[in-house]
Structures are given as structure tokens and as C-alpha cells.
Image (cartoon, rainbow, N blue to C red; front, side, top):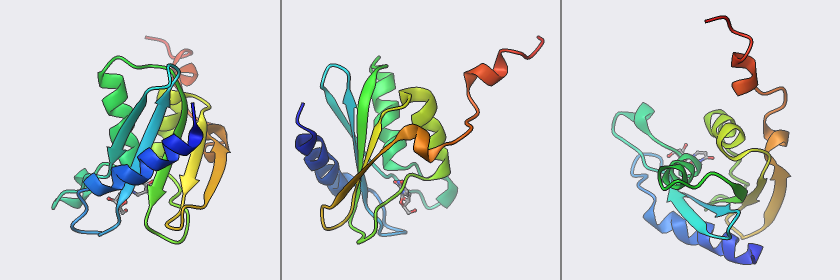
Length: 134
Ligand code: THU
């Protein structure tokens, strides 16, 4: 799979952002192990806290369609700086996608690639729940 294609899809996904409050459009494109791409954009709400980031929209879309294995996620905004995933998205990427590549794309189409684990050192995960007596 061509990573350039994944990057283009993340940029295209911004067009469906519903962000009337922040005016900060974000697009995400998630690459499955089978080289399928699932996109997402940020969806805001007048009750601000209900907003869902582009990354989580893409990941939840994929999970809800039965996809479970991923290679990479690309994240794009119009900003001159890279749009780094928020804390909630870092936790979701880590648990639901594992240590995938996270490709950030700035408003000038520059890219920078990280591993998901770089964004979430010493994570809390399912392993932590195993020692709990029920
Ligand atoms: N946002 C994302 O969609 N992804 C990120 O990684 C950071 C922030 C959205 C949430 C909100 O709609 C807007 O960007 C401004 O915070």
C-alpha cells in the first residue's frame, strides 16, 4: 500500500469535518492490515464536550465494521503545525490499534511519522485489569 494514498485520504477527509465552533478541521485515515482505508473527521457539538476527534471517528467506524488489525493512521489539519492526537485519542489508538505508525500531516502537507507507543509511554491497558480480584 502506498502511504502517499493514505496521506491523501486523510487530507480529503477534512472536507467532511463538522467543526462550526472551533473551525479546526481534522481528517484521519486508518489503514487496515488488508490495505483498506477507513476515514474519519472531527464531529463537534454545541455541547462542546460531546465532540469526537477525527481519529476516534475513523477507529470506531472500523471497529463497528468488524475490522480489528491496522498498520497506520494518518492525521491531517489545516494548521501550519502538526495536529498531534489528544490524550483520549492516544489511549484509544493504543488499545484498539496497537503500536501502529501514526503519520501527522501539517497544513502544508509536510509529514512526520511516529509509533503509537511514542505518544503513550507507560500506558494503562487490558493487562492492568487482569490482576483485579472479581
Ligand atoms: N481534534 C481532532 O479531531 N483530533 C486531534 O487530534 C486534536 C483535536 C479536533 C477536536 C475539535 O473538534 C477540534 O479539533 C479542536 O480541538
